[in-house]
Amino acid sequence: MSMRMKPFLWSLLYCAALLLSDVVQATYHLGLGDPQLIAAQSYAQSRHNGRPPLRTLDPAKTDSECRSRPLDLVFIIDSSRSVRPAEFEKVKIFLADMVDTLDVGSDATRVAVVNYASTVKIEFLLKDHFNKLDLKKAISRIEPLAAGTMTGLAIKTAVNDAFTEQSGARPRSRKISKVAIIVTDGRPQDQVEEVSAAARASGIEIYAVGVDRADMRSLQLMASIPLEDHVFYVETYGVIEKLTSKFRETLCGVDPCAMGHDCEHICVNSNASYYCKCRNGYILNVDKKTCSLKQVKVEVVEDPCKCEARLAFQKQTQAAIQQLTTKLANIAGRIEHLENMLGRA
Image (cartoon, rainbow, N blue to C red):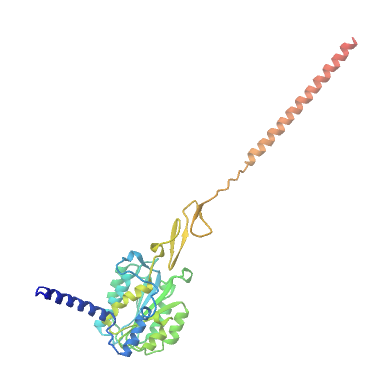
């Protein structure tokens, strides 16, 4: 091998090592043979290990082909003493990144944040901000509360005060999904099982994100089922941003009309599916895909005024003919009488 080739090969090996390092980091720094970390990781990645994901997204595609379904979304974030200031900043970056992946708007996804420690503070409501810039500014202003971990109280506050129509949640008749994402690094100091069950029973879908020392059993008690789709774990706040792509897969749905359809005229997106419509002047056929021209029935309606005039004219004509007939009969009778008189003479 020539001396010129050695630097090139060393550079190639160095690049390969960097790529391998990135892959290892993306798996949440799991050590080989560490059963506790492997078990924790399974909650974050099991939907990609052993069965295909429900949705696959091409990272190279733009957001124009990935549109989140409308949500009433409430983040419930732990800011207790165990969350250091630098770590809490990571949580805020995660929230801002999540906002970037969503279609935010009054008719799209609405976002609220509930901050908790030993007390609970609603940072902003679903009705407060309808664009990404305002939301991210509001997130940047959130400060940690610093003591205690009253997760059950935070969930109850979110249900009673954040997911209400007065606070900006859409009415049930609109069928807008209500989603809560809880982020915590500790064990709740109050009961979470009953309040979480009540929240889920009211129609709220709960995702539980555990960080570092988070109690896995508590995460399972809070989350909706299936747990493998609703419980996540990351080893440190330093990698929590990696969960953005996980939630992107869950909350962001591909427009089925953009992916291809068999509608003859118009494809209408209805979240996970679609249906077909026809342009004006056409009707949808029995196959619910093709269209046919509308058959317009023409009904001739007589003008009642014209009918009455025609009947009156007919009556007048008949009366005139009858008068003429009578006159002619009289004239004929007179002529006959004159003829008889002349014959006698």
